[in-house]
Amino acid sequence: MQVKKYEAPTVQEALDTIKRELGPEAIILKTKQHKRGFGLMSKGSVEVTVAVSERSLSKKKVTENRLTEESVNELQRLPADKQADLYEELLEKQISSVSSKEKMQNQTQKQDQASKKITATRYIDIDDTEETKRLSNKGQQAMDTYQATRSDTSRMVRNNKSKVEEEVDQLKRLIAEMKTEMDEKSALSNSGVQSLMRQPALSTSALQNAYQQLVVAGVESRFALELVQNISFTLPEAQLDDLDTVLDQLTLDLIENIHTENFFSTIQPRTEGNDIGAPILIALVGPTGVGKTTTVAKIASNAVNEKKLRVGMINVDNYKVAAFDQVATYAKILNLPFRSVANELELKHAVSDFKNLDLVILDTTGRSQKEVESLIEMQKLIHSQSNVKTYLTLSVAIRDAELHEMGKKFGIFRPEGLIFSKLDEALSYGSIYNLSHRLKLPVHYFTTGQKVPDDLESATPERLAALILDIR
Image (tube, rainbow, N blue to C red; front, side):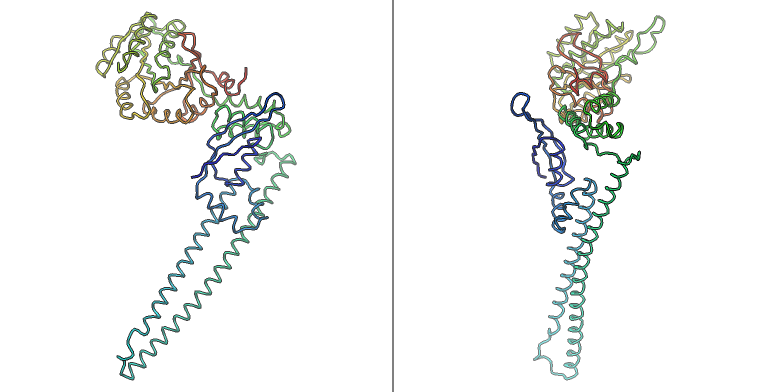
């Protein structure tokens, strides 16, 4: 695997260079925007980090070495998926051709060895005239067979050479057919035929700008491309060059694709005479240092003051004394009942003590996503209660790669939604969109500071779209 960096004025120019030099199977790892100089005349650029496998480079080299410069240029004008298919097809043919040559060489070596066995009997040992005649005939037959085999081998080599030339001609014809097909599609699009033969996702500077804004904001490149491609299908072609129109449509598409949910939509206060059943249990899980305990206090305060719910708080696993003290302090300030538990039996008793409440919030001790055994232990403890709902709490200030890993490892808790903390410390917010789509989970809350209960806001599609696109 090779990793390289490319810098160009626009994303599209960088992608064109990457496609030309590394082939269509290069993977975009990271995109960074640079700004050089000062004032209105400063020029920006985009740095794209890509990775490509040795096999992909070999396919590209094998293909281009067997074509003329004109054919290579035609090939590079094809879409990436068509290029990849051609590279793969030609590499398989090359491997098949090499295998055939090796088979022929082995066959020739066997014939050479067979010919050497013709005079395996010493002449001094041959004293019978009939035996001499028999061996002479046998040797002549072997020599005739050897010569015939050599002739067949030469003919196979010539045929194989002709076959390779035929394959190259066939590849040239295929490239020409694809180019003709693309020209026909372009002509149909220009004539106003409404079909899928629309402009490519990054065909205009406005679409490139929209894509670049998403990637710089931290949106994964494949999600960004999907959003921009949807714009190219939604807007009339005449409007794809207008940046304001494209960004307006991008905002609408973002809002439509973002999944948020009201945290208390399924939690209702009990009415008099309807106290049957257990309270709803909510557990916040996540790695260390993301602000779970503070978030628990904010949600509890919101539940009491705005939703008028009867709330209790439980500290699960007093592994960290400081966390226990913090939860107990918040519970005392909010005048809420509080328990601390370290095993399943204690948790069962604590929930039983809170059986008349509407909502019980569990604050869990932070665990690293790499401590698999510890995560399993915590999962068993929490889910020893049948009616518990878990919510994954993560910091937006964490890099997207780590968030992705945390999302996968904490999946054993079967979270029903996401809470993102520390928006005030983050520089970009695309990772929220990424993780929500990867895990297919709604976003419930954002936290924007340490103040309890002020720095807590319900997540909405409009708010997240504004954060990603930096709309004030």
